[in-house]
Length: 225
Image (cartoon, rainbow, N blue to C red; front, side, top):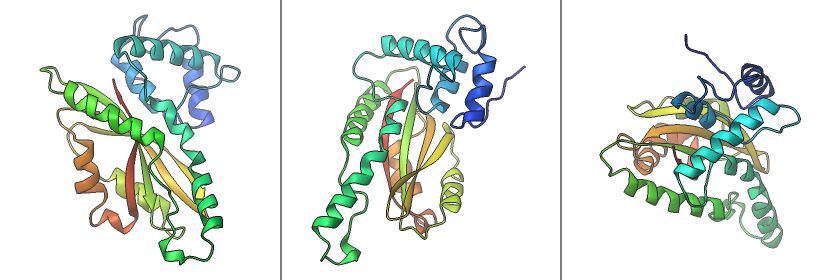
């Protein structure tokens, strides 16, 4: 019988997962399975051990096994929690250019170090996807609105309305950017042979009708599963 976990980005969702993992090492059985990978992709960052001891231990165990399978510096889901400091860039820029035209103000700043690393990781994943056996990747996206008047609920609905073989939307949250503006951070799992993230962004997420809400879309983290 299938087990359903909902809202793993919330306290109630993590508590339910923590209760489920009581006395268990993994989601299904005593070995790492695809069930663990699917749930792992939906948890944005490692939960604190004080509040969710079972989930924290399980998360660390899965992370260790994934790291052993995919050597090199991991971009990982947890990087998504570091995206918030992007607020500092527009605030500083505004102070230095207070006399400039507001229409020219870039509220989101330049590409971050995390986005650069994610792009490099994505190129590695493209090479790996040429193998005969199709692999999967966990991707964290930053979806940025036009301004503070953009309806973020409708923006997320527009993003999730995109459906294609090999694309599975996961958890999401809103992250403050500055000046009352928030961006959508959303997780997705893809089958590498079926979905190109670059094409998804250029041909689906930033064109009509979705570009009514979406100004731009960036890859924050790209990790092979």
